[in-house]
Figure 1: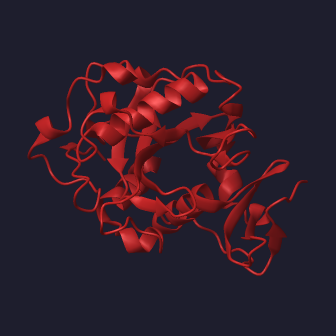
Figure 2 (figure 1 turned 45 degrees about the vertical axis):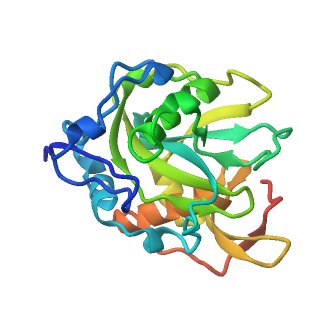
Figure 3 (figure 1 turned 180 degrees about the horizontal axis):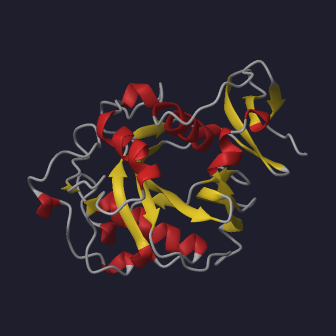
Length: 256
């Protein structure tokens, strides 16, 4: 199934919206090393069609109860949710944040970070450029091999005051990845989607303060918090989720 190019309007829901105004998405992207950044689902592998559909239809409140403040407060940021194809089939690119960072230290996460002025307008292409730029800085990937095919609604991380735009990417031309700066990144790895959907790897993480949320066992470590929440919703709305035991709880410091 092929689809056309789409525009992204961060001031609405952050979903794709037809072909009108493509110029609002395409543009120069020196910060990411690309001639232009556009949202298009043309040429995606068929297995990614359900995820592209999620980007078109999902509402912010379906993804999280934490939504950006109506006042406009919060630091604009973006993450790259990058899907590729590995030896075990579809996979996601994740990284372990350095333990010395001020925000979300030591957590497993998507590549990403705050928007820089050079990324451009946060209401249009800024989040796209920021997601690709940060992924290049943190993992060394070549952004020219990434096809941005969708954008999810903006979400909010209260503990760090980040307003996050999740950018969906297809790793059309894979490139080597690894730790670029150990002050930012402890490790870079891919995880098969099959492992994420495996009920044996699904748990509920319990924060020391009592609140809980979906989590994933990723080898010896735990994916929890914002990253796990977004993965959980993508799996659910894409129809990939398998029944799992939500009563199975683990602490945040869980290790295999």
